[in-house]
Amino acid sequence: MTDLIRSAGLSCYPDVARSVGLDPKYMMRKARLPLAVLDKPDTPIAVASLRRLLEMSAEVSGAEDFGLRLAEHGGLTNFGAVGLIVREQATVGEAIEAFSRFIHVHHDGMKLDVARDKQTVTLTLHLRGRQPTAPRQSIDMALGSVHRIIQSLFSSDWRPLEVHLHYPPPRDRKRYHEFFGGRVIFNAEEDAILLSAHDMERRIPSAHPLIASYLRKRIEAIENRPASWEEKVDEVVRILLASGDCTVERVAEHLACTRRTIHRHLAEAGTSFSAILEAQRADLVTQLISDPDRPLADIAAQLGFSAQSAMARWFRGHFGCTVTEWRKGMRPRARPADIPSTSAA
Image (cartoon, rainbow, N blue to C red):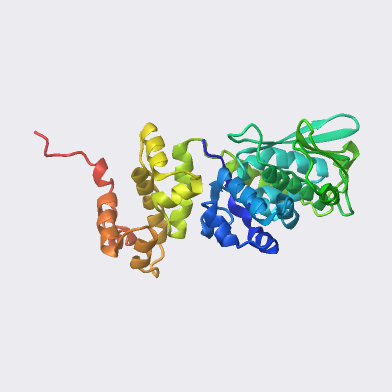
């Protein structure tokens, strides 16, 4: 199953790529990532595509710390709603627990385990993937981001007790020690950050309990990320339709697969791409036509129709009335498909 991540994690990529001599658009095309996601931070993309981009960027540029550079430029805003709820918790401990609880809403292939004893708290990172362990740059970006988030919650400089990385040491160990600000152990058994248990009690001055409660309810309502191919295709179609650029090829780019793979998995689930597109079009078109000043030609183009007349025929066949009649409230009690036939012998 394809794991997805919100494209907000790429918001700093162009600047970081240019800083090491890379052309960000060229690298994204090479990694088969849609360029449009740079302007739409809440768009789901395949984790595999992001990992491919990070590894290629490090290799081509020679910047062994490319993942750390991205983490260094990022922050809570890169995690969308998850970052907001973390920021509003009363203590650092509650913020870390919230991040661990809800991180899958942003990245459904990432897990953060929190283990405590009397003196130490260990945050262990797990990144799901086809390989036995996640690629190095992905680990650096993820664990580096966790470090930056914790650091941002303190009003003064904060340092972890230790940072553990499972891979061999890089050529420049100093860079890692400078970034994490503490002891970094390579060839470790797992990827983790160790901090003092006392740090968890530190209060966050900017926290707002009422906002935290509101955000928690909001995020709990959306925390069940799509799990099946049908659900994930449906999510991407819904987002791409709203942006006016939805085709099976474009959806395949976001899921890091081919159109044939999408058709095969949807057929196994008893549905099809056209059925999902039809359902999402029907849901979106009623929202779009509620604005009488929006030209129907523009709506037709956004929904992927070849012409306004093609949308008009589809609308009448689907809803049993014209757009004009719908806007006036002259709607049939049931869709044509729901009305039983009277011509059967």
